[in-house]
Image (cartoon, rainbow, N blue to C red; front, side):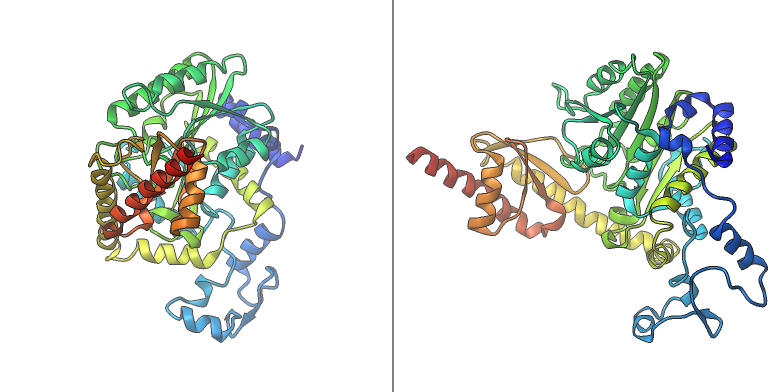
Length: 436
């Protein structure tokens, strides 16, 4: 094992042996090189005032070389803020700005010890980093039965972990904390579990309320007290889009110091929060018991980044930083929030009208981009295909009964027509089936 990896492991084992035990084999082996091109280039950037012949970029007239046809469209920004490589952990100013935003929006973090956010190539990359660091073959990854299908690729296909499902909703149509607790305690013989908490949930658009949040935290603490090391990943992709009756901050703050056997990891980003899907700017933030522990986790995370993408794109990091520092940012974001909330509320009022009750029910939703219909009479895939082929309407079929509808991308005035077309399609399929 490389001495740097061994040193990081010794730090983790000293600061919290449970966190060390959570690491995968790759997580234990990975490190960020202190000697090499990046470190030598960083030293040269600080000291080489005459000539810097280290990093693989081109310089012209004292600034990064660039094409005028590109710079003309980006003339607001200095070449140094878009053409140079960003550091592996991300643009330092952006990391600080995102941390400030995170603390303001999640008061429950308070004075708890958390690391500086590390920039990722959006949230999927953040989840992939967490999978690399903590998931080994056979490890259990606990997610609800209503989930984003990419978790299977990220944890099960790439890393050989085992997906363990529990029902998202209980009989009261609230979050099923008892199901989460049961799934966790079933891992006692393994002594380790990875939990992914995705709120607002994709595909259902559900976020727990305050009481449910406490129940989730209690279930995780119970598992830790039973001797299970729990890595909790809060997938906060749709953070901030909380409309009614839900928590208005991430569970990361509640879980940050809940037990020495619990490692809370916040995975979020500008992707959906700031409506910049193509920018691919995300963040990974750790909670921990000491600065030394957080530093070791950061170094290992940087090692994964260095070994895969080297560093994230610099221009989009600069664009996001510019937005966060703009005095108009909060007002403009609130305007978009109100539009999204209006679409969610209009969707709910249409569905509650009663005129579709013979065709479907719907799963509770109160946040995010999506909601899910629970079909009563037709197959979800058959309905999806019929909608697409006969009416030019796109939806997502999940299993045999569930149809995901993204109200986020439908203007509020068009939502009623959308659901009327879905209902019409159900009736058309029923008619064809009855005639056979």
